[in-house]
Length: 158
Image (cartoon, rainbow, N blue to C red):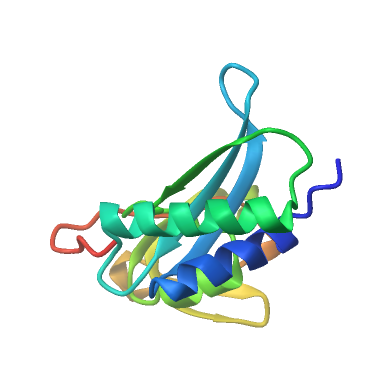
C-alpha cells in the first residue's frame, strides 16, 4: 500500500488550519463492510462544532482529490476526538496536562498494568501521573498499550 499517513496528515493539517483547527489524529483502515475509511479527528480550544467538521471535511476532500495520497476508494470522516479522546502521541499528553487519564501499559508497572491519574508532566519519554493520595508515577510512553482522557464533570471541552 502506498498510503503514507504522514503525507495524509500534512494535507489534513493544511485544511484544518484554514478553519482555525488542528489535527488530533488520522486513521486509515477498513470499516465494517470492508470499505476503506479515512478518519480525521480535529480539535481547537473550546472544542469543535459540527460546522467546523463540515468545513474541514469539504476543504480536505478537495485537497485529497488534488494531492491523491490514497490509491483506492475511501470514505472520509471528520470529527472531534471527543472528551475521552485517545492519547497516541507525546503532544497529546502535553495538551492534557492537569486532566484525568487512564493509561494501560503493555507490561505491569509496580504490579499494575492500568493507571488512572492527572497528567502532571511529560519528559524524557515518560508521562508523570499524579495519583490519588498525592503520589506520582512515571510511565514510559513506549510501553503504553492505550491511553484516554477520562470524563470529568465540568470538563466539556472537546
